[in-house]
Image (cartoon, rainbow, N blue to C red; front, side, top):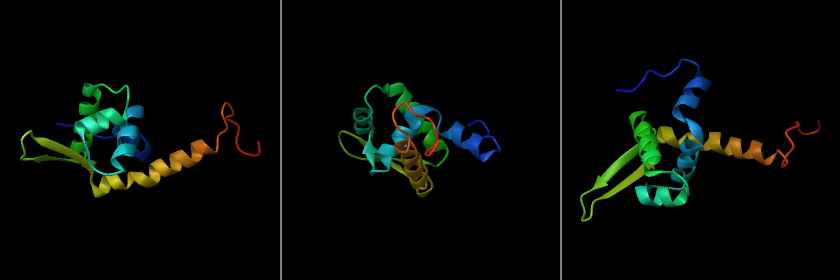
Length: 111
């Protein structure tokens, strides 16, 4: 059972995308479906435990689907749902904003 999400949209977003790993997982999945090991390899430093927890949370909130293929060895693939795909514009906006900030300079442009 999942914890109820906050009513405030910003607070809800922060709960769902808790911490930098969650955002980076979404970034990788925006490139297409990935297996667990592909995600782990694309995110140096993430522990298998953290990756599993984030993927389960995303699955519970219908951001990610988990598909198990009946093969030997079994293959599990993670992909963003259409709802999860909507995070593309959010990550693009974050990247654009971050690119506008010079290294060590947090003043607004023209400020």
